[in-house]
Amino acid sequence: MDYITDAREFLNNYYSTFSTLDIESITPFFQEPCIFVSPQGVVASQTAEQVKDVFKLIAEGLRSKAYGRSELINLKV
Image 1 (cartoon, rainbow, N blue to C red):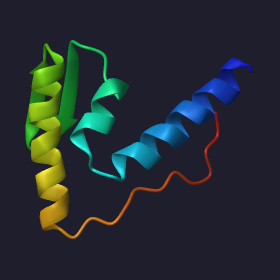
Image 2 (tube, rainbow, N blue to C red; image 1 turned 45 degrees about the vertical axis):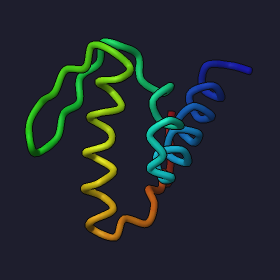
Image 3 (tube, rainbow, N blue to C red; image 1 turned 180 degrees about the vertical axis):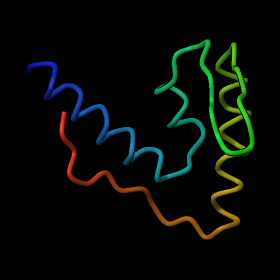
Image 4 (tube, helix red, strand yellow; image 1 turned 90 degrees about the horizontal axis):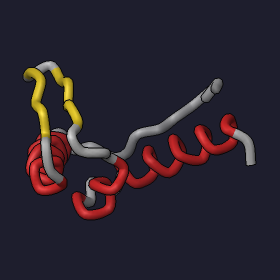
């Protein structure tokens, strides 16, 4: 497998997992420390627990807007 295939696989897995809004499933995709950037601001997370806390807020916000899923189309790596 080459790096392009690896990148495509990673991104497809990430989008598929993100679409579940399952906090435990999405957390392993993030390396700590990490930074979340959104219209609400920037949040730095130092630990996996902080990543879960931030993603919980993201998931709650998406659910309140009847989020269905994210799609990755026309991926060019």
